[in-house]
Image (cartoon, rainbow, N blue to C red; front, side, top):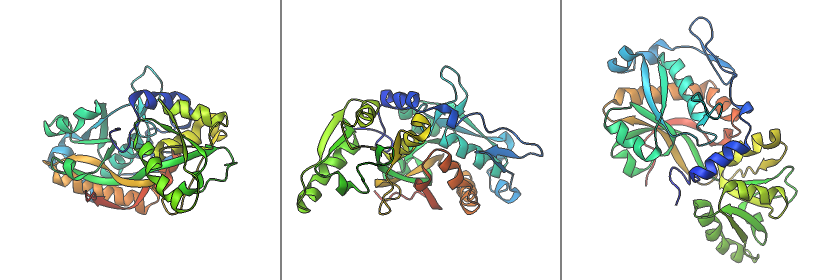
Length: 313
């Protein structure tokens, strides 16, 4: 079973990274004059009231030490293979939060399963790595929830099969990576197909998401089910956005079986949790959060209100 929120395997994430053109995400942001920071093409400035919320430790250091597991597109990626410069949705959001708070969000790669223990050990103040907020993790870290994401449906450009919901997959060939939450989702939907008097979904499993996308390109399947953020990113970048489309079901804006994803913060720094929550709300109110998410083709997973520890199970 995948980690994070139905996270692909490391090999699949790397394959998706190679498939997607990084030209869509890197190199357009830089420091701006007068203390401004440019994120996703927009200038952001420090809010003194938000800065005042920070714990003295962070104010003195001038930075928030952030752990992240790279690569996991579109959330965290390297601008260029073989180099250490980072990009991605989480990285951009971190820079935006830092701009509002008047401190730097310094990202350091860390293996995913070691992130929470590293925060507990005081090596990091926070983590931004598409981490699913759940009750077990809330026992050791606090979360500021910034997205709701689940499974999405990727189709060929123009959506020739006219897929609009999971029900439209009944009786058709659909690609999915093996041993994922998305495979479980398709299997569980077979009962709905039967209840509607339709044939079962003809599930075609593949070892990697990139293999499933090759089948979709070749017309061997009508759709692929994968995490919605990954689907949005592939739709936006593969063939410069001309190869695939992302299905947007109004009944599931964050994707099917969506769960909250959060910025994990040390329980030793409750003031930092509150400061990040208020900075995130400021980005929401100004439209900057959706702007950042839209850069990666996943605007619909953005939250409309900043919450803390939103997971209920």
